[in-house]
Image (tube, rainbow, N blue to C red):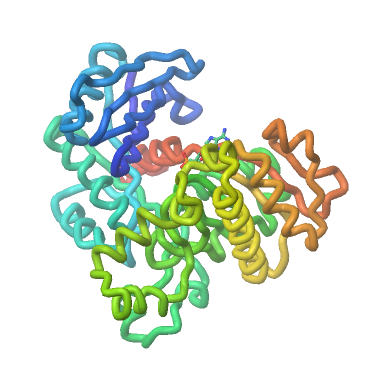
Length: 397
Ligand code: AMP
């Protein structure tokens, strides 16, 4: 049975999914996560019925690289899913810059060009590309496809791509791109199936996970987004600061004597929920804490999300619905309700019971704005794009 593997490779984890190719599109065969890379690696994978296929760690695994662990993952798939013939690997690649937006088959030239974009996504891009390189070594003949998180925002209206910087810098690519595009594209498709009327309207999708952003969609297309040039911008995140005054960054360097790498580490890894709470980047841990700093971090998260949402409503000229997704968006009724309370002026009325159940629709029947929860599936989007990219242009029909 032919199958495609989707990989979403980060600094300390690799999310993956194996899809078999059926007449109704890719079907889940296995989905899993390799976590704790660099410390205590752990692999868990489940089949389509949530049955655990593998749950293992590695003794003294701290020194194991992404490449070594991918080797073990492929070896496990070969042993335990022998009737699955992997015909391609698709990857989430966070930044495509100005040049790359459609999913592309990877070759040497593309890899080199994507390497050059690593400074624009230092937390993600090097790991995305490391996974591609690791698979090239393990399976040199396997076609690989790069799917860009910036791609969905490629046709943003000009006004939402620009910073107030000199034109020459915009022309060099210092502009707003937007991220989480694979997630938003999946949400746009899923919403079209679940609620075609709302999907054709004005919707704010809220991808709230360790990384967090908002996307203003009209008729399923991105009109504006909370993230800009890098995945640092916009909302407060697990360890990333979100929008701050650029003057503060200058001050850190000129007055606090911080080097550029130290500022980068501060903004990407030590800020956000972690920095404000001083406790954790994980929302569940903050809910469990009775430290007032944890409560302050949670409040800031919700306030910033509502504030950014209000700005995006302007870009849409109004709003018909909100869709929550990703770890916090799909599971955390407290945060959803805190954000919606701050947007009550729009006429949002949340159904508390439906919200607690993480129901597909969490707004009251008479709410002026429909509020939905849709689990995202970036890996499925990667598989769909990977299959499409493999079809030679002339065979597309
Ligand atoms: P993600 O990056 O999409 O995996 O989301 C990670 C974030 O989602 C972390 O802050 C988690 O604490 C949060 N999260 C995951 N599951 C839950 C849950 N059941 N309830 C509350 N937060 C959750």
